[in-house]
Amino acid sequence: MTINQINNNLRHDEHLDFAVRSNIIDTAFVLSTNRNESSSNPNVHIVCGSDEYRGQRIIEYSPSCIPACPKETHDQECLKMRADSCLEDSFLEAAVAAAESVQGSFFDHYILDIDCDYFNTEKSLYPESLEAFKKLIRNAELISIALEPECVKICRHEGCQLTSREISERLLSIIESI
Picture 1 (cartoon, rainbow, N blue to C red):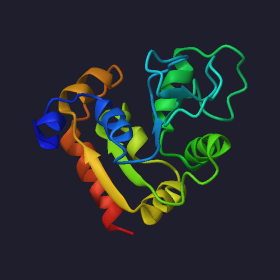
Picture 2 (picture 1 turned 30 degrees about the vertical axis):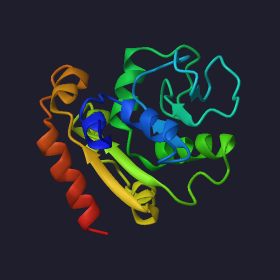
Picture 3 (picture 1 turned 180 degrees about the vertical axis):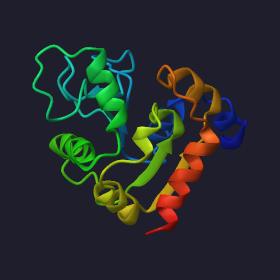
């Protein structure tokens, strides 16, 4: 079996686990909209989760809300704010800080892999400022965009009609503007 055949059978973030275990990449940082407290995969460390960092090579950050939220207990309103703010400078800067708190050199050399199902609302594609996102784009060695059309349908918020095509077109327009 070839790597291409294996890759065609991988779903969701299994390709990251495969790449790390095969030493194709050293470490992966996942900014996720799925709120995970722990992982059954021993190779995954959840930042702000219940487990201590033990040198895992996949680091996942899935905040429960936006950085400035004053609430102690986060609710549905927080999930909507987080979804709307996923490209905002303050949100991405907090994510970068979380990654660097685990591994300081993480953003020296990286591949920016953007999954379209990360965007759950129309507003998420049009933040007030794109400077942090543009910096991630400019400094990336490579950029990939995973369309995941079925996951986009499943993950989008109620009333949202975004498609992976619309999301990828917006992302490409941002990338091309740099």
